[in-house]
Length: 123
Image (cartoon, helix red, strand yellow):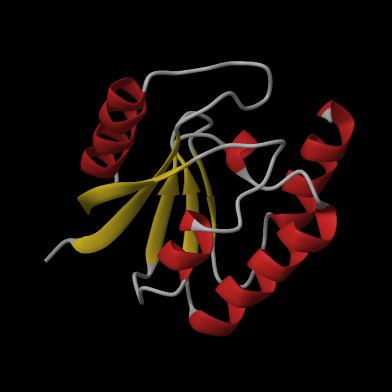
């Protein structure tokens, strides 16, 4: 049986780029198919200055064990907010996936430090 995975996409520009939502969803769907996850419709965040406070937190609180971001650059710009997300995921057994980068962060946060280094070096 496939695990259910909630998609998470952006409706605006992030990391200097704007990718149409239908393309984000296609990439997430392909990622899910390749990783034996059953794709559930995405939540679309209205992206304003790196804010991901509405739809991301809604997705994190829906009890899905897999949240598939289109890109790791959809994580909030604010480091404190990212750390809250990692902690919430660890506490609730949620695995974060980043379809474009083909990365996965398990609930023990084995890649959190690496992701933080990547984000900090590119912000």
